[in-house]
Image (cartoon, rainbow, N blue to C red; front, side, top):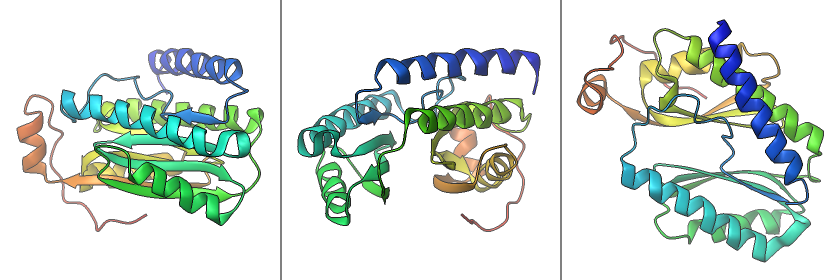
Length: 217
């Protein structure tokens, strides 16, 4: 990791951990990718970014109203695809959260990764934030990737990767994340685009094209 990247990550992680500590009494977290702003490149339209923010806020509020402190739920939206992670007390609550989120305005699809477990501790959540920071830093250091194209969420050692990326970028980012200390599993929730679509989106920043292997989790 370069010195510049390390400074960015340490600053972002410190801010995220501080925010977690200050909000320790809140059982629900909005936008699990606390360090997702390390690089300000985003392949979503500005409208989609605003919609994602609105989805996260509305979903968080509605889940909190329904379950209160009985559950710890993270809501992360990327291009209107919503990832829900965290812990709920039973399967009925798991399904309830999915239904609540799926009914939020502008939601296109829901990926339900909630676990039926007791709520994680502050120490466990802080460790997840640190892992996310390390994954983000590794993506920043990769010379053949645009780190800002990815949203990273970590829950109980499982790292989720989201974004609008090519198959080559998806495979490369997955391989990088798997090498990061603390990552137990990588789950890919990508919107795959072609190399030609990428050139149309960001012609001045398009990575060198390469043939990728088939998708895999």
